[in-house]
Length: 110
Image 1 (cartoon, rainbow, N blue to C red):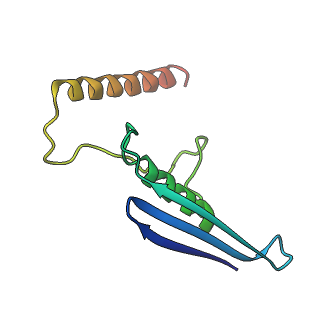
Image 2: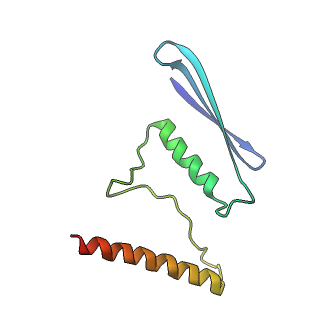
């Protein structure tokens, strides 16, 4: 049986996966992962996303793949009271234009 133990850490989460029947031979195996925030990371939530996707994998949950129509997407967006700068707005417009261009290309190939 696999048991998952989560522990709170000062700057993240510690996840231990304990398997008391590893490989079907009743071997005991423990895997420990540390998910911590990194102030230098451009996306401060990347460790949280990685934690959830790894947890899904440990539990045998299928979030979908790049080939599926529907995929679980853990993403970030602006807060409801966030006031973007001109640079933030330009970046968002550029991202949306890129996504729209990709959709237009797919539409041409149908």
